Length: 179
Image (cartoon, rainbow, N blue to C red; front, top):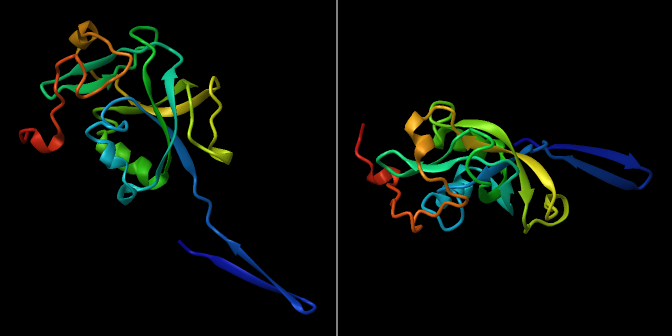
């Protein structure tokens, strides 16, 4: 990124002003394999952009969080009002990470990046990144409107864990057979 530096002489003093290009950050809610301790958390690595954990949260509306396909992938079905209030994590991400997540999540074919309202449960952020527990924030989420109708009959979960008691072991991308 380019830095612009101006120098202004005021009598015997010099003032230097450094202007950094603005970095726009986006809030993203993760509820599945991208959460801390889950198989794809490593994808939030700095090599893919910037991602900062802000808080745990749950959806204001109920949604069906289901495990589907032969690879046991967690899907948040974009069917508000059914299912459960889903628990997950809020991250502040930069443009580079957002583009990476779009590719990683197969957006817009497999998942669609949509807005969701969340109730903040706790937070680690300080200063401008602090999210107050109990407050409602809007973030992006990768949900899907393109799913098999029978997925609506699957059990729903309020929280996903790849090693959960559901017994449906997540198949990582590296372990999937080529299509």
